[in-house]
Length: 201
Image 1 (cartoon, rainbow, N blue to C red):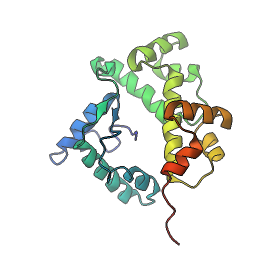
Image 2: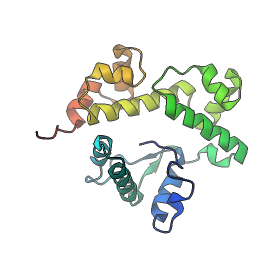
Image 3: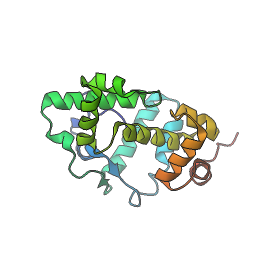
């Protein structure tokens, strides 16, 4: 799951009732992996969250998921995230870039467009991203697209081809190849293994 840290306001997660969740979000600055240690009753909840049409209930489901994950032992994907050491102005630039990518990863993003958000020329922007995230800008965008596609594959009844294009991939063949390389199985296999059953009429 991905969302902007202050989407509920700057002080929401610092409230007295939410210290474990606030600590979870601080630890998640570079990403957390819960594979193999997430409680079984939590695993289907992101799918239920994606399928919930009511905004208030969706928010309650999200907070419930965060509460449960706060008590689990997640593994940091990058134990020493460099973004934490940035001065405030550079941290603001970093968050501006990441917000742009989260908002537009399903669209065609050019290097020049992303670099302009950071106020850098393309070559400098490439080095900037690599230094902070240890990934190229393309790798970061593809990662977002794959995560979105995986959620759509398990949380909707859409066909693979539609999800491919909706996620920002240009053709199904490349989508299948990239998906399998990163998740070790094809999109179709992902559907068969993880798609939630449709509710009874």
